[in-house]
Every structure is written in structure tokens, then in C-alpha cells.
Image (cartoon, rainbow, N blue to C red):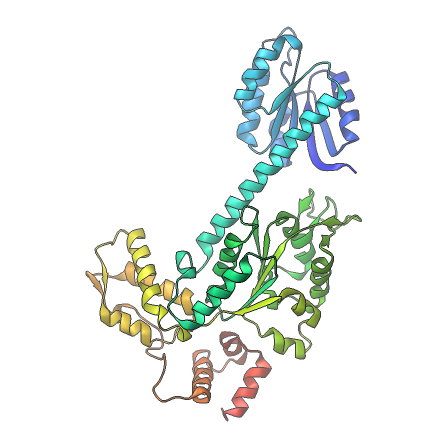
Length: 453
């Protein structure tokens, strides 16, 4: 089977181009040639070239290798991920060694032996693959460290409910078990997913995230499984999907409850077989991923309502963990608030600013419908807008006032209170109120009927 790489050969000798193309076409999916090195600008700006096989001299009478060095530097600037293997005559070996110091992977002597040329190219591509993997891992982790609602705070807790969750996470993180994180929006499920990866045996491999709520159904297969060039109108080149990108690492499927029923079977098949097939291809590819999913949707209720496949739920929730809302973690509010406050004081150069005791009390009395994410944003807003030396309760601008735990309410009264609060917040809009509460419309209607609302 041909390897899925794109190789460009640059040489002013048509015979060299022909012989190299014939050889390499037997082993690699895409091989193209050019006699003019100035074509590099056009080709590299439009296509993903994995490797350039580059001659050292182009103009007649020149044998100092200066042109090869020039174009090598040009390739490294224009496409740093592209590997370069030089072709050189025996007397130019010293120049080729110099070129390696400038960023070339290696060189081959003309006339080459096929075995030597193929071995050099394969070693260069292997290095490129490893570098790409490292870069992808670093980019992915950095992206999620920046975007996650929790950073260092994700493993800090004094509340019994959250401490239990963290203990369970640490136990299962070292295994390859599929994990389903359930909980309201803003509780930090995405940050916990990243923490699971960091504690796992796959921590040196990619952590790839997919927001299933943001992917159009028509693009689902292309995004997750990849596509072949020409598979559809905008498929201008081969593209690996998220499953392939996460190979040997962790794949985090956020908002899995938003996945259309018609697409759930395709995801299930990939998880069961550990194989994917790019759109437009007939051949399957093996993948090895550790799956972490998250949602605020009531998947068990949706199974009963035929909105979510039961077999898919069984596949993704080998271990199911419910992340508690912040209102059930009252002991953590001062701790988290101070951590966020210190971070934003440093970020906005207000390290002399302090957080008053009355402000902490107000934070503890607030209901936090947006959970930890809302607490983080509230701390950032308070630091930005503060005019004095101390942040007081009125500076917090908490919406809805104090509503954490009205005295004397039992469980049913609390539930009725929350339903009323959601309906009032969204002015009677059932869909929005249900989403805020983490319920289906049907489940919200049942509670409204129960409490005669």
C-alpha cells in the first residue's frame, strides 16, 4: 500500500525527475516534479508538501551549491514542517553537510541507489511525523489550558461531593476505560477531561477535542473521520479526521448529547471496530484512542425517549462521573474565588487589590446558575471594574441577587424554586429554561405540572 505522503522533486535535469518520479510513485500517494525552483512559492503556499527532494545546483556552470542553500532556507521559512532531502554530486558532500546545519534532513549522492534514496526519505518522513505529533500535542494542550473554565483549580476542592469525584477520576485516569462526564454547563467538565489525559498513560500523546454541538451534521464524517481529495466540492486535499489525529492519545467529545440520532450509529461503529474510513475512500484505517465524553443532557432519559441510542450510551460510559454544580460545593466557593481573583489581579496589574469578607459572603450566598465558569467571569469583571483598593459585595454585580439556599427549603421546595427561577429568568421560554436546568422540555413540563406552575 502506498504511504499517504506528498513529495515534491526539484531538479533541472528532466532525466533525474523522470527516474525519481517513477521510483517514488511506487511507494507514495502523491509525487510531483518541477525543473524550476521558483515554483516552490506557488506549490508550498497552496499544498501541504511533506518532503522536498532538492537539487543543489540549477544554473549551468554553477557547482558551488549556493542555489541549493538559498532554496533550502526559503523552504524552511515558507513551510517549516516540510522535510528537505538534498541531491548532490560526490564533490559537494562538504556543502551538503553545511546544508544539514541549515535545516536539511540529509543528502543522497547522485547517482543514487534506490534503497538508499527510499531509506533516507522514509527516515525524514518518520521524523516529520514525530515532530507533527509533538506540535499537535503542545498546541492542543495549550489551547485547552487557555479555554477551559478551570486551570490549576480543577483539582482543588474541600467539598465532599467534589472530593469524591476527584478521587474517582484519579483511579480511572490511569486505565483506558471510556469516561462519561455529566453535569451542568460551566462545572468544568472540559478541564477535568484534560486532567484525565494528563494523569493517563497516554499523556505524551495528543489530546484532541471535538465540540459536537458546533459541527453541522453534513460535516460530521469529514471532521471526525477525515476525507479524500475530491470527495466533495471543498475537499481540495486529503485530510485526516479527529480520530486519526488522536491516534494513541485521548479523544474528547464534548456536548455528545447534541449528536443527531442519525449520526450516532456512525460514531458507535467507529468506537466498536476502532476503525474509521475517510469520506471518499474504500479502505478502513485502524485507530487507537481513549474516549472521554461530556454533556449536560440527561442521556438516560433520552434513551427512554428514543433520542439517544442505548448501545452508544453503554459504549461511552464504562465509568460515569457526575460533576456537581457549584451550589453543591459551597465549601469550594471561597477557595476558587480567591484563586481566580489572584490570577486576574496579576493579569491586570492590580496586585494591591483585595477581596473583602463581605464580598466572599455574597459569593457564598449566590446561587451560581453558571457554576464555576460564572464565578471565574465574575471575578474577572470585579477586578477590571474595581475603582478602589478593595472589592466589596456591590462591586460583584451578581445577577438575580442572593439565591443560594433559602432557609428551611426541603428538596422538593428547592426544585420548585429552581424551576420558577429559570422560568422567570427566560420569561416563560420553556426551551431556554429547560436548557438552563439541564432538562428536556418534556421533563420540565412534568415538573411544572407537579408543582402546578
